[in-house]
Image 1: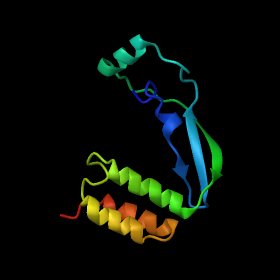
Image 2: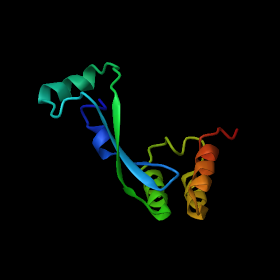
Image 3: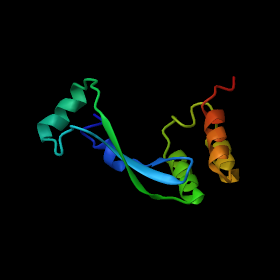
Length: 113
């Protein structure tokens, strides 16, 4: 399903050095037929593909912070599985560097009960 939906062409990876990266799965088809798409809905095997990374650009911290906030705003109870969206949003807004965002991520993914 990930390959058919071209997930790799829609993602940005941010590193701690201020570089934004893209990636793509090496060896995947460039275009999928309607049959491929329908088949992926009912038969979705797991296969490994090599990944190739490419540097896109430098980024300012605010870009990463906005991307994180956007992800929370569009979350379907993945990021907010153990925390409330409002509290996570507030913590993200209070961050001023990559390390603080990483600490927020670690706090977010821990079951508090």
